[in-house]
Length: 217
Picture (tube, rainbow, N blue to C red):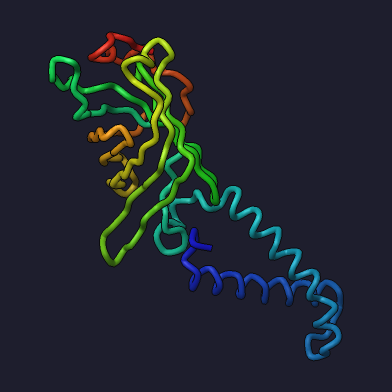
């Protein structure tokens, strides 16, 4: 239950359960002073709690009014656009300019997947998580990924794993800014801003080309 602030959640759940208990007793004509009548109502309360939790984890967790005090993490669903500045150097020892990139985030209450794309590669996350500590003023998204460059570039750029750590900026969130490092001993900075709720599956046509290969989408 790391996705919830437990104290307010349990208070809400207890309050909801009591309301359901009283309403069920009223409808069924049961006497709450009778222990056996209370026992008979427990299945109804449990079922109502289960339905409420399902509705909450499917839809309600996205409500902005619940952020912070009940839901500690932001809703990052959608496509983010920006650039990568890598420390990778070519055969002449030169570092390329800013690399246009998009990051699509598919997020539910309990799961997340992150896909980053450039004109040269596509990477998919396999381990994701938030690091949220309000007292320490920390809001971060971290994930590990596998990157697969296009097959025509494999001689220069091999498949590899890496990790990226984003600072989550703004309330509501408007920017992701962070650093990545890979098993190829390369690092870099990534800066992204929100583009659309749609999960784009290729580089947009209005992006500039990759500074090394001149490849766009």
